[in-house]
Image (cartoon, helix red, strand yellow):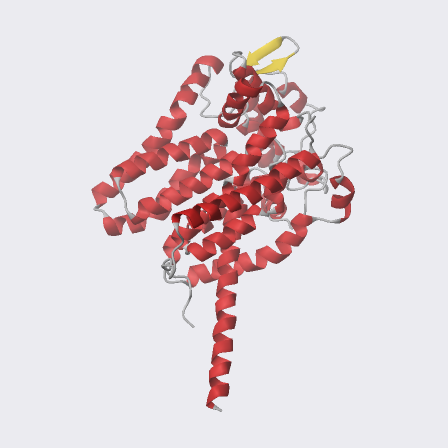
Length: 448
């Protein structure tokens, strides 16, 4: 049987403009209600941020009231680069209008998260076809992990939305390469890096993926110019923030002073040798040298954290393969994070007893992962395998990052829509095979 994964089919009965808009609005409405509903039940209108959300909330409020990009300490506010700037800046625009209302920020980011299904529909439509794209969109709308992360002021929603927009524009650029498109694409990738620095290397990954197909449409010189403009766009988007950090922090900080800390969280005795944390991001801040890092200026703490992580890795080089596999296993785990992201609920939340015995992440993964694996295999055997392999490149990139830093559900969240897209492709292949076999049996019976 020939592979079904072919260019997007032309609908036999195109939707009218009003029907098309209604379809998009219905998808957004369902996704938003699920995310806003979870935020209401899990956190509540009187929610108080803690951990990472507390940082984003504080920076956003300081921006809104003219205190600059800063955090708070016992001695007052101080300039920071510890968190990437895009999410606090977006939140600060809301705070300027409604005041310091954390629950309003949760609803704003629930709305941003509700745009993610629309973005995967657009990407899926141009790569696999409209039908598969919409199946992936509805799967993304009801994805329990993405709904859960929408209940907190984190970078995941904004980062994932920009990631999918950038991937869609990357597909458009490869299909019809233009210098302006390459530059604009680089700007979007740069914005994504300002939401989360892990995106900084993704333009290079996209350039590698696009290199061969670009050569089919462009001469060698024009292909190089397109890629150079892509990278220039990234630099133009990230550059002003990097310059700000140079003046304020007196150090070269492309996006954040947190990268060394994140690396150290995955390269220390607790995250390597404690069975409860092995492969994850965990560190004991009460012991040295980690406790002293917290008292250092941010750039110095970042540098020393990175150096300590490298030193630890060299001393335990023999454990590297086993720990890398543990990180990868935690990244692809089919259950909620015990003692981590899976329990960020207020004490009186009605979800606490429910999630105590029902793990929606597990049941979701049991259904979706086999379909996604089948979709990936069919993609690699399809007639448009190079073009449709873009999600696989990105999934591989994040899997490698997990082995470098640490594994968990939060690092996996941005690729959940891409997993849904592959699952939709796998489901469509199975559906067509079943229908084809049924049609063949009917044909045999009719001849009898």
